Length: 297
Ligand SMILES: [Fe+2]
Image (cartoon, rainbow, N blue to C red):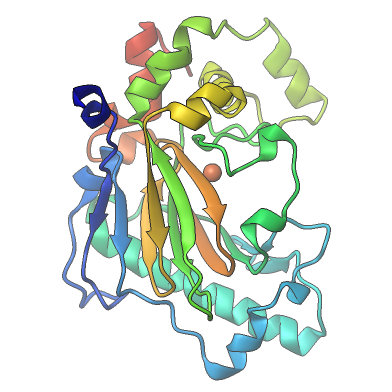
């Protein structure tokens, strides 16, 4: 019994906010999100206007694209198919989510004001389970976010999600162990990158910028967790269901997560330099540097 209790993961913190803007009650919770909690707002729905409800259909997503997105700073719509008037209305809906997410994030985390950078805004009208992928791309396996072609070099990934499913379907996640425990699980088996490999991958256009050793370690953690079926099955974890009308906020480079089901979600990514955290020592970069006794930049 005692060992079962030790494996219980309890990282979800619920707040009763009903407003995205500055009139909502919750503010100054940087410490909560930075220590690896999932902040959930079960009563904070992203409301769609009646004409926008037609967008809750996979037919708007280009079959080749993973999801529909708006890129910043250009504000350009990607991955969608339709006539220009419809696409402009779809874009406007996604832009409104970006703006409301930003207002929410700056209220929750006023310490980040002036430092939070807007990343992509995504709309996912397709079912999680409909996407067939390799094990490395299989997001139904527990993982921390790390991208082979897009080295983050320590920059944080803060994400705001909202379930806009019209028919009662929850977004179903699993969440896992704290980042430091997760890093300790695999760190002993992770070697250093091959000399010159980061330079070569950048030169060859495989990566958008040069990978640092931080990126190397994060990708290794991502891959080792996803390929470890024993860990996936019996590692410390908990199920979390996000009902329609729920918004949640998480550092996805820190919190072990897996998307098990659901359809119709909006997602805003924010980027933040480690130095701009309230407690930089909680970051994956500083945690890995402490465990490895060297700089990873
Ligand atoms: Fe992820």
